[in-house]
View (spheres, helix red, strand yellow):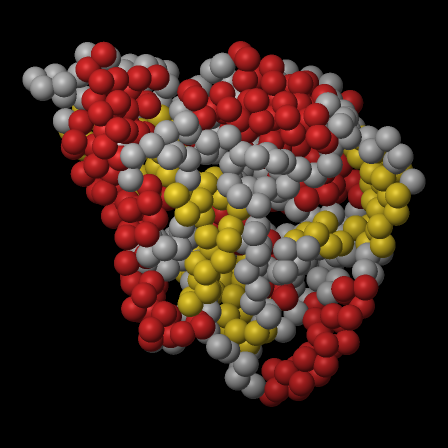
Length: 539
């Protein structure tokens, strides 16, 4: 058995510093007003039900409200959460977690292993309607149960609580990224009694019971979300910020103005056309770092003429990714010619489009030939409706793409909505031609990007791509225990996507934040995990 202890050397080094900071700041807190963190967010959540969420904006909120078995520290390291230690079997197919004896819900109830059993069964049960349930398919019988349509055999899910502080999870096969997978919101617990009593309304502030560092106090759409420190949280003594006010900030220029006026301590994005100006004015308050994500255009491959590879390839060929990354995004993004971003774990060379090194003129000529062969040209223009969620950066990107498509005679119209509406339409199978999308890795493994294209992934395969060979390769990769052989199998699947172009990759993300010098402890990381509990504010 391999054993992992909660008090890692990192945490033992950190704790004296945190306690010292607590003593230094805590005395002042007792006499002065509470410490309030004004924090921008990508937008309003569609829901705060952890088992029904799917966006980065919701992930930021849920990291503060709830705590899973393991979590991401603000430095990106996977560290203990509710579980103080765990063991893994020699064959890698089972984990045993020991829960903290002092873990509590915000109402004072103890957090029990049975709460995790309840929660994992709830998200896997198809009746819940969790679009992200497939992230937990490595758990024994999870996929079979979730695809049953009726939750048949839910008690056969590979989770068990022998006692209140012991949780056992059995897997279908060894999964090298399983612990990191558990840091995702799909692995967060819900308070069983609240869900049973209030149903879908358990997420309302008046009904909210959380086990994280903060508890929900107010949710005013288009205005703010207010959280207050959870005094029953097991590590409450080291939580330095008393209140968080999250503000939806899809208008990035407005958010930058609010930051400069001192109304925000941190933003989650920066208007790309202002990067240079902001750097000159704010210096190191502008933070840009690598991020595990890809910016796409999803093509609806189930809809004519976008089911035609010639059309998809032509549209991709003439997009000047280098121009968009440098001029539209101020050099804060990297041009993308493949689905999987750099710095991914458990992988080797990534697959990319074969025209990456071809001159723009040659790419344009090929694109014109392809569209002509597909029946489009003078007198018969290709008409494309381009959907995107409204931000300054997205708007400027979509306009630039439409301009670049004009060389092919493409006529582009736009539909833009708020993020909540946009992503709900994609998630629920709504109609579109081509839609803007971004995917931030939930764990550092190529599978977390490739699984988006599985034909039965109804929650995320919004373009309805279907390729039996691709599906078979991903299943083969899932069954392969040798990491090098597995990487080769997934590389073959990746190559299919590079050739088929069901989605058009545009750029690889960076994380971009404006951060006040008053904010202490902020660290960018590949996962973009920024839990408030690890930060503090100077007076």
